[in-house]
Length: 191
Image (cartoon, rainbow, N blue to C red; front, side, top):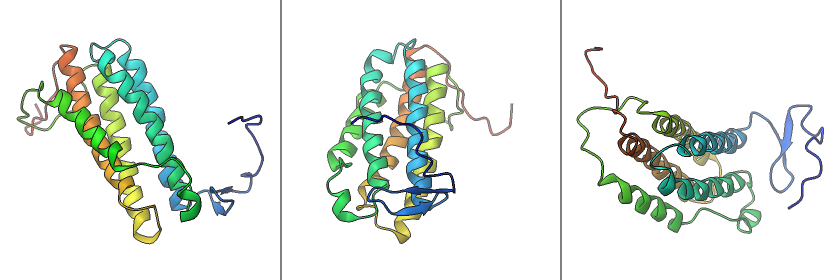
């Protein structure tokens, strides 16, 4: 794929094209979905930077690179309302959800049991994962809303985002553990 021009002026009036050429307003629900998936992908770029100085980096960096590509595929599927066009795109499959489950299980057994809710923190890598988790949850909520009134290609987009948010939580905890950082826990008394 070659991109010669960054600007096209096609969106200057508040509209953009979906895959297949349909023009929609830039505040269309479909754009909210794939735009938030793109935001999640950018947040994972920050996670990668934080992982470069984390003891968890050697294990997690290749996984995050894979997930970023999967998110790009998910975004393209969400940008394609036509099922025939969508069928020709790289898509999220059950193997991607299964892969996230394996990735979670590979590190979750190292972690101490939770006795309270976790507050974001625990070092730069851990905090970055928690930020990515919140963006992922927002993307999931938006995709659930879109799926109520539009074809998104089945249940896998929601399943993938749900599992990814779980993975981001566990990876954030694991980074704090591997980096020897205390994991901040919620104290309901506020102290």
